[in-house]
Figure: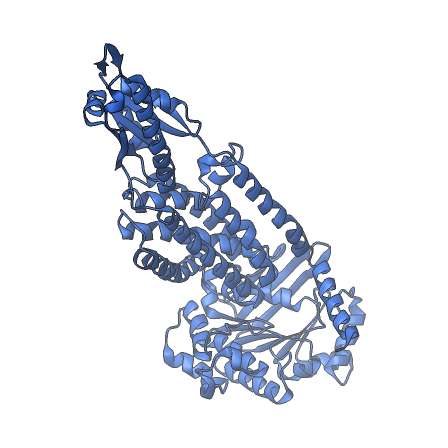
Length: 383
Length: 244
């Protein structure tokens, strides 16, 4: 082995890297940006959950004392830091569960105390909003503690000389879900976002590299010397990559549904509509950003900047509401945020396309913006 | 309609401080091979790209087949072969030629096969371009600019990197095209190719310093070779040397 030859080769690699200022800058800047995001996200205090309590309990009189277990339950709930407990009416609770501004509601009926007294069993009736199974699980665990605490509290309050003779109080959760259900787990929550993320990632990468090659090989110049218009080039690229984006989307979707056994409530075709829009964004973003790359190596460096940052801030893993307030506007500037929202609403909540018109409109706006930018790229003779 | 397929009038084009085209005027007749001769950096490629509409002149005008350029519609009647054989490596010879012909509005498989046969690549019709030699790639490139049977073909240094034998074949192809009434504008910095053109334009410093047949230019300059004639005209005009 020749050390000299090895050193000569190593020196050439260093010289090449030093000549590629953009790559150097990205090597330094990108990890710092991504680590900053990660640090902030991991250390961020999760947003406060909202738990409503509809307390219609009439209470009972035990050994000459008025006992209202519903009130005691509300007191116990107020002592938890993990969520904000709000007393609300039944109609308000319904509305808040539907619009997602309450994560769960505990319903306490008029004969709650009576039933507990008679049956020595505390059945906590909880309705979970359910669109995030991780939150539902978290709350369910807390509520089990709540139920036990309330039961103990009741024993203390209602203690009488004969109380010790009575059987011990038991507690259970009687859960209902607006969306999803107890069978949903973390993967059910992550899968819709991952489907969107993977399609976005691969289509972006393929388009960016393809268009870069088109430019470097001179075929773009030849295309521009034909009657084809810039918008036809864009549509042609979109059509071509849409096919593969959808094939990939279908494989990912079918695999997650039938192999990973993911639950879904919505129409699978609606998921494809979201994917079509997402592909339109990623194709055009790829075409536009290819302008700023001189080689495939530089394209790869867009991945952490464009794709991973959206994975971190677009709500794939961390909920946007749990992020620091100042970071949330950045999430709103990312198309994947809206795709994730739409895909989750369709898959977990079973919503229709009309229901997710908001996020779909946002993706469309992004698509229009990047189509405008990429048309300029495709139409420019010398890039 | 004039008898000229391409007319360039007083065209100026600057890139920053570089005056790539400096008031250049030329006219190429229908059915002729017009050779643009000059050293690298003389402005030949800029001129061809301006003619085809890829670059907009700062001033002056370009007309192709009677249409002021840039005009996307007339491009269906034009063929443009870039200096590098700009092809899709993953596609076959046929797929490449069919793709460019299709963009020009030609879907006739016979015409595509005829173009491939014209450049002697029928045997390699279904080979991927990535597997071809440099010379073969140039031939595919040529087939892809002629399958749609254009009236004007612009060839930017088509024989660069082509071996002498193939170069002879190329010129035979070019001549055969003019017999079909096609106008060819061919740029080259190889002076010995000049004799094969019907007329020549000497380009230097973004200017047309002389124009005529090879024989006329030699005679006018009082030289035996086109190369010597070029140097005489360049000296007479005292054109600044941006070339390399």
